[in-house]
Image (cartoon, rainbow, N blue to C red; front, side, top):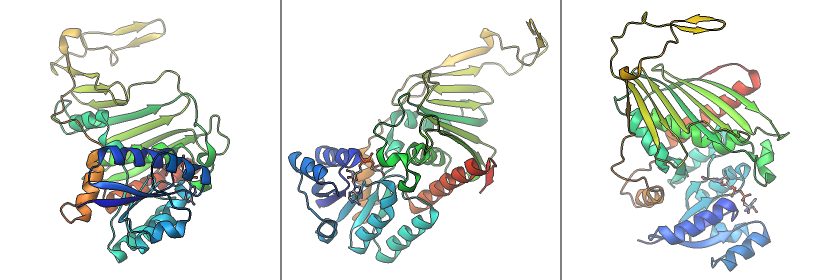
Length: 352
Ligand SMILES: NC(=O)c1ccc[n+]([C@@H]2O[C@H](COP(=O)([O-])OP(=O)(O)OC[C@H]3O[C@@H](n4cnc5c(N)ncnc54)[C@H](O)[C@@H]3O)[C@@H](O)[C@H]2O)c1
């Protein structure tokens, strides 16, 4: 069965959806586009899409699936309007501005019986597939620390609404939510119990352009992420530590990296000592090279495909699958995101 997609907000991401759905999702037609800005509507027409001129026309149309790609502060109203008009909904991330708004959206989905999900496309990044495989393997021993990092060094491109918190701007709303979703999805089954966050305004004066967030889990696992738009010397995309080894994945969208692992745990700690001009240390004395081994990263049986997201949405609408980005996950992501804002404001760890 062919489904009909309506896209509201034909900006950077809305136009990306239109083109990628047209090219890559055979079971879905991009049937209608609406943007409040006439220039964007003209561009959508030039790009071959059918466009309407008012929001009313858009929601009254016969599309059965709506993709909401407007600025974040509009997500709640656009998602709710779409479901009230009988459409299934994919919202761009973040779902909305806070947990209260999210509850209204989810209540509408439950009342109308319409699908509501969030486009968490970063679950399909190849580096993420690799770290997921490592997290679920035994190769590092008892895992205790995960570090996820993404860097830019040019600040926000054309900040616009992204420079206003009331519009849902700032890097925590923008990239933080992707990184939270990735981390919580890695540790599904474990419960996040604490959040500590620091948000910095390095060049932006109104919203954060650097964010660092630490999430503690019930199991004792700690996950830390950094999104930083002013870093000129990036560190590895992923860094995972276990009692027996450490793995790194070098780059976003890369498959390169390594695992360094202890070959032998029965070494004598008193064999060595580091002497520095200012003192000595036995605990920082490194293992001998022959006590370590370097292993390649695991291979993936299957490359992750972004199309899986849309295929799952369509199969869910047809009752053949259940949605992979669930309401429970969206709620948990939002709780952690809001806890991060609260922590940054109070400079306190927020218990969940
Ligand atoms: N998942 C991802 O990888 C990803 C990447 C980028 C952006 N996004 C998300 O996509 C959404 C849009 O971001 P963007 O970067 O495309 O922003 P953008 O500013 O480029 O596009 C937003 C568009 O919405 C239009 N718009 C504003 N108010 C509207 C209204 N009331 N009704 C209809 N149209 C309206 C604007 O004219 C603009 O064309 C955001 O929620 C953002 O977080 C997701």
